[in-house]
Image 1: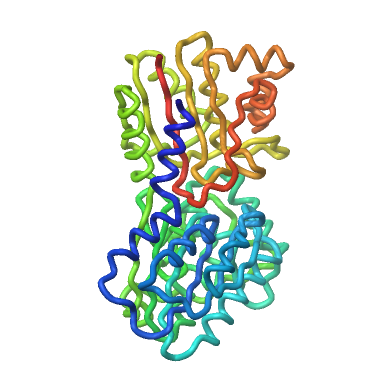
Image 2: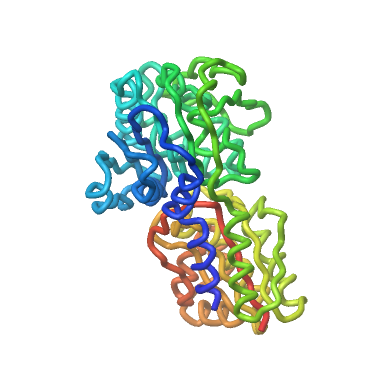
Length: 402
């Protein structure tokens, strides 16, 4: 049941469907030849949505996505070049993708109209650094950020500090040509300046109190980004086409259709995943029969040598201790199908997870202390693997009390 509800939520925010819906509202095709740029883990799926929309005949395109997320079928539908890049830690491919993006914009004709499709993961997948900045410094920066426990807004603010294309700087290469930007939001508040680190959105990062040392060897600060009101943004339109709220609403609808009373928590998950899990589990155990739905993006502060697993696996395992011997089950998963490094989306835990894992040799406290929830959940048989979903709207937690 939990997997069916999760699948319904994912279908509602799928990149293909979201883009096709947005473009179907267009009353007339845009003037000038359309040049397509898609960046993110949902890039290929979003580009399929353009192919479904005859109002946007694409002349040429560039699709940059995560390794393993390229779609050969897309090339048979649209004249696009697909590049695979690195996530969550950028590498040389990220810098190559950044150069390819700038070249694509520079060589497009003066009468081009751009259509940008941006989804989660874009911050890592495409980058361009100031001066002789290198991938070693870039990787070190991102490793520090991902281990810091900072929320995504602060993480992306630091990334913007070194980037020549983030914080709206990419708009300089549009040279006044119009651009429509469709976003799938993977950030709290759906702020376009934070999604993908704001490639085409004005944003002046405020780094005070970020908790991150900005002196990274191999990196130089980028020039000041363009400010709000800069003429660079005059012909750019921004639209968020899918978000976590969309997924939560679809999950609730699926739960009610199956006959469950559903409670949707509108407050987004934040803070440490290991603290959020027990709180949710206690609420579930103490509550009435029914379904609980919440979304967001908690964090995990990593130890020096972290084990396997991501924030949703950590949340699920920490919840499992509170669910022991209860008539409850809980699904915690990333909506992109990837919870941290690797191909695990998250986990589904229940009242027997703890006993199954311990019987197989797992230790709950060690797993949580060492950011090794994935190993314990593998032993208990509770990992959730979905493959790439074609979207990314943060995380979903769906609980059931039978």
